[in-house]
Length: 357
Ligand code: NCD
Image (cartoon, rainbow, N blue to C red):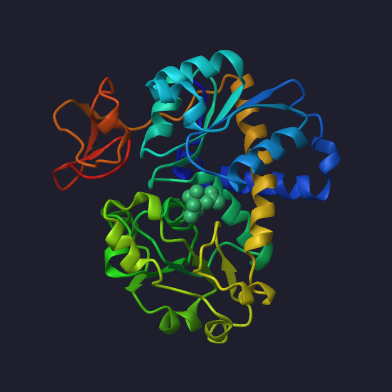
């Protein structure tokens, strides 16, 4: 099994810094990287809608000199015939050198990585994680603010199902002086494992539903879409969908050097009139996604060629519990073993989706 990227914690801070440095070098001198992946193939398996992530992965591979094999949706792949993620990963390993996979189920990327013989990059697994969006976010913050430490980040919108938020909190928690302001309706707060992580790491954070009240304190405002496709109750989505709309009026409350990020796509949570504000960095952020993915593909292919071992996850217990998260990959793939990490205070956490059992 090769080194994969399932969540940002699979990378050390030093590795993240090296990826950012490579991305900056690519931006400065793209010609030097035009053939570094000649003859290599990236398979993009996207079992959920995507524009930016899939196209930026594919553009990244082409700009490195490589090729792309693409399955543009579950409806036209063997997933529609009932093929398991594990089998798909084994098959694609026969044809490609590296996989970028997006899947609607929490934990699916880990299952793919455990069964592939080539590196797997998680391009979003359900409402769980989205590490390459986070790498994009970090490169953007570095380019816009010139630093990654000592920043107050406001995360606003759907913090429960927004996988980009979970990965960004994980990553920014490792930089000194980070503070979070978690801005959401009560129903859409971050999952318990994220609060536990913040508490254990001693990261200062506040929880509020008040965007206007928080705005003056923020260095970075990270807006997110309410994730309609993850709601079990359509009426609840209708009730919460217009919780936050960032407008030029509200932008007046922000610092002159605050930046606004959004993983995109936006629905209505940032009014188009905000786009003209120089602090609106979300389109620049999308461009950065291509450069950091170039750096990541290059790193993982080099490590695979050098046969470096993948990072092991801690020991886990198998079979004593059943994951209660209906959106977990283990809820639909009956052959998958139920695997849990014991928690220090008792109880345990699903290895795939990280929900507590
Ligand atoms: C995000 C995602 O897919 O989680 N989009 C992206 O990758 N840029 C955010 C979203 O869909 O709201």
